[in-house]
Length: 235
Image 1 (cartoon, rainbow, N blue to C red):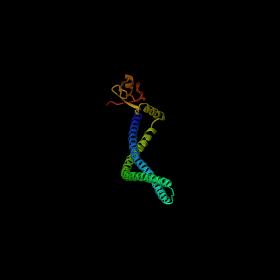
Image 2 (image 1 turned 90 degrees about the vertical axis):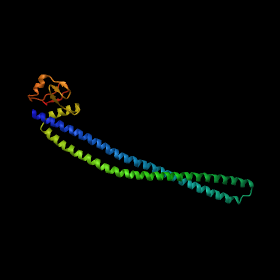
Image 3 (image 1 turned 135 degrees about the vertical axis):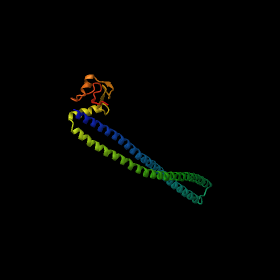
Image 4 (image 1 turned 180 degrees about the vertical axis):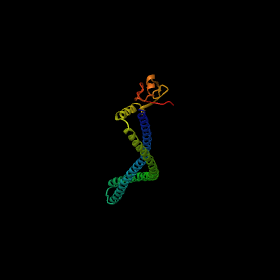
């Protein structure tokens, strides 16, 4: 029975180590995800700027087309004025030309604003791309380093899993199942040290006869308060 208790104690140590390693690995994976999210966010900002730039370029093109069309209308109207016979028609065409020139002036102002905005976005986009390239390079190095840590931990986990399998092979299947249930119920601690008449798992006093029976190693004994399997430790 003493051998079984020793094996169970070893099993608990291995499981707790695996838990610790997995927690550390999960933390590294979260950091890895955060690194990738930072690069993705930077690229998303670039995509938004590129879309805005494309929109401005398209609007600039439409303004230029409208500007050219208005200039053609002015030229056409000025040509037509030479053939006008009445003063009334002459004045009407003159008003059209004045309105068209005002429209051209407004369009030119809009074009200047659009060009200024395009230059602004282009400058911001160039800066963002440079920052993103630097971030991506640094992130790639960090990703490699984090992944190496994750892989190293996985190697340790795999080794402990093999060790765990080796231990469980020497224990009855029913006992391993009981251990697993207790471990799940008691936050990873299926075993508890018994010392000086107390269960160190729940800090409750053990019945004297039960505590005395621990010295005999005739059977597995559990704490009546927390149900953990007891392991006698004198020091």
